[in-house]
Image (cartoon, rainbow over all chains, first blue to last red; front, side, top):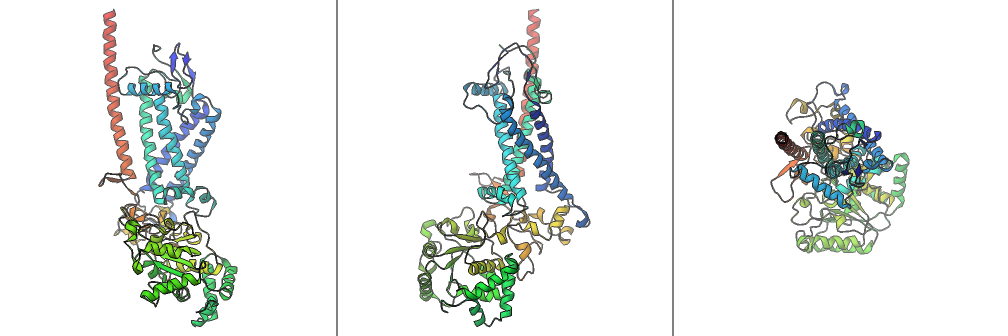
Length: 236
Length: 368
């Protein structure tokens, strides 16, 4: 099987299963899924709290627990992201894909437009790709990678506020408020980024299932087993 | 009033006892977070050091800072610090008027060149050569530059001088500009708030006069001792926030029970100020205590951050007046549109595949 080393496009058969996603990448992916579910659920409630509960405040810590779950999931999210960045340095070809789309490569751009044409029903059949196709890669980078990085930075800054100016968390994160003007702005951007990541998640889930059914290569199963398998005849 | 006066001499002349003087020193030390030794330091400094002259200028503003300042809880802070300042120049509070007043300003600048502190209330509007604020017959921006040139340090009183406040709210027709964007070569200490708390103002002045230096400032130029924590962090209603007990409407049972005002738009969680600890009017109350959410008056651009009664900021689409939403509305629309697009795309995909399948079947039948 011949593969373009930069874009990952399968150029000629015979098609053989390829080990694409290494164990740390798969683990990171599913940790992210769980963390994001918790983060978006609790995060939405932090911005729009559920109806009040009755009784004495002394005996309740309901909203406190919502925030606690948010902070714990956020720490898991941030650490998983950091480990994933580390793995991009030591992992295989696919581990770098979402951090570094090869925008300098012409065949990558050709692949991107070919894939775009396929999704706009201008092309009948999809090319086959080891790892992400160029369009997916660009979406991952622009939406997931940049979005996550931004939400982690603004989130840590908002978290540091509990300690206040002049403490070590604020000494590390205080610059965020200087860059964006004031805490209210940072909150608004943090929340907008949540919606941005939800938008990504919705599109992502649709695309992986569609690809899995229609494109002639395994997608969902690949993030579980790590191995890409192929369906149908090789493309000419 | 001669140059050799100390603060202590000045206080004694105003009939303040030594006992009261020492009380003032310890109170100020406590409010500045200096501890026991700090009180002695302040007392020592006030008895031995010559007083530092202060010039207080008023630009585009409403004088609420001055109104707040003269209501400082501790009588000593009010009488002494105020008289120490107003003796030199303050358009609102000084005895002199007209040309005499302007003359005294020039005299003070000349006499204490490089040694006086410039306190600015309000800000200069820069549009049309500063024509929108003309004190003493010339644009305020010129006066500000003139006085700032020989000042040792500048205090930006209130949100006007610190950030711009209401006159700088969009679209800012007079181009009202905070002091630090006009004067860039002097140390500037921001004391934001609309107005700032009286005790915070006297505390900052006392610190500067006593120790002859600026207090520690945070990354945005505010004194850390008063602006390092949010109103929310020390709010007495915080337990209701953690418990999940919120006021839903201003007239509901929660409001009567003193629940957290977060859901009716309290900006305490995004506002750095000392309201919840120092409080106002001799520590009587503060907005949240009287049942209304914090509006975030000490934060940059608080006028342009949407409704005072909505916790989430209103975002205006650039160039499209009238189209606005909050982060949630924008997010919901985006996800909704994406969902609809996905459904359409999935439907088209399914139809196309079904069609190509029947065609393939027909082709294979023909081949047979």
